[in-house]
Amino acid sequence: MRLRQYLPERSPIGKNRGMSERHGGPFGVHGHLDHGNTAKHLVQHHQFSSHVTPLHLNKATQKFLELLPLPSGLSLTLLTRAIPQIKAADASAYVGPLNVACEKYDITRSVRRMAAFLGHIAKESAYLHKPEEALYYKDAHRINKFFGAIKTDQEARAYVGNPEALANKVYANQDGNGDVASGDGWKYRGRGLIHLTHKGQYVALSKDVGVDFVNNPDLLKTPQYAALSAAWFWSKKRLNALADAENYRALSLRINTKLDSFPEREANRKRALDAFFRASLANLVSLGIGRPWGL
Image 1 (tube, rainbow, N blue to C red):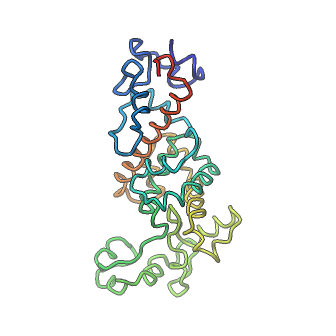
Image 2: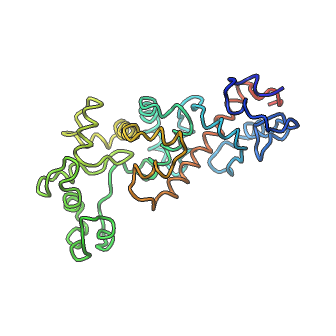
Image 3: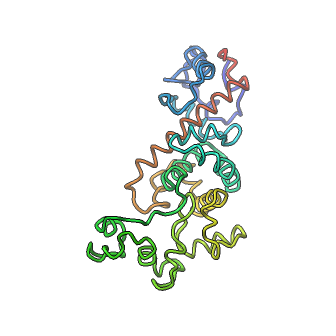
């Protein structure tokens, strides 16, 4: 009996005719289900943790699972498996706001979108621990290297250990910010799980969600609005579409103009996706969809 009977006619698995009949179809760890016992074994022995080796699913199964939503949303346990570096207090603080924000901006439609989103916010916010841009530097050369508005190491020395002055310098006269003396660079420095930067972004977010972040910018450091602003930015930049198309390099460039951190972002995404695959497989087993294989 094939999985076609249990899935919509247009499902990626239902359409795939190249699977091994001997192993009962497409649910493949290493290309097959080991006569229907692999997923059951994972469930029974609690091997859905961040410490197990990645699942090696065949491509049809992976594509199918990526297009499913998370079975019951993002739970505390699943968040810690998707981002194993997260601190317990941060996981507890963010799991609810992330569910609300991701639902609002249609990121929850598929685990593919959710994994990409979590992969990037993990990098942007130091695993959901720092919803504010770090602008404290001890090394003048690093300041000169990272900020185009600073031209020499000698000029950069004035900003060593002085994050407010640095922000006002490097963000002056950009996207709604005033000049250095206005203080807008510091006031509208990066905040949120995807660091929202510049007054223009704060104005746009305020208008769209009906909360005054322009006069209350530190609201973006709270879990509710740190998560909401990140999902809003994701939606504004049309990143769901890029995730759907698996165009992860282009997606990354819309968040960060360089690809130097792309390998870390991709590693985060794949780790989250693996955690979601395990949750989806466990859910299918619990629903009895694996019954043709004796799960």
